[in-house]
Length: 267
Image 1 (cartoon, rainbow, N blue to C red):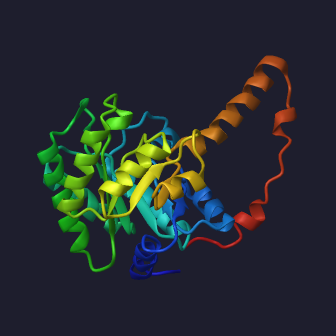
Image 2 (cartoon, helix red, strand yellow; image 1 turned 60 degrees about the horizontal axis):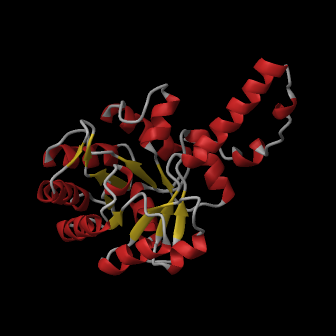
């Protein structure tokens, strides 16, 4: 198995190479499937992991996330980055502690957002202080660790692109390695963000544009968030509904190469 130093080096190199897609596994089985399919890195999804516990997004503890991180890290040789929501607390030290905790669990990347679960976006200077603390913790680790700073405006009912860009610029100055504004829906908006910052930009894959369009607009990393897993949940719900309502078992007629995907045992 790759060491954390090696995984960190691979993950950092990905951010200086060709643009890439980073899928978001909900569990170790997903992780191993994505590795077998040829993806180069993995990122957790807070919403997807919460679903596996029967909860809504935002209702999982840092310790639960750390255990989830360890399970995903041990499932494959791929680098793992962790969705750390707001760092599980409003203060800069909370963000720093979240980075340190998942690093101990095997992660070589993590994201901190500027949305508080109580229902508000942090004031910009305070948000930047939180990123600065997270960056200090990330860059003090004895292996490469990629810190992603997230500006949540666009998915939190505040479609202010100018403020989003100003926030990302502040987070870049605070030490973030990657900048992320989930909710960008057009090539023009992606381009505006990418041209305003120097660090690699991560975007959330949306049905309205393609990988080619995103890359041409300047995006370097494209994540799918919880949406890819929801495709599977939707398929299960449809098959279950057909059984319950119609006694129809036909939607279960699938064949998957599980032996291929799960061929290499985890640690």
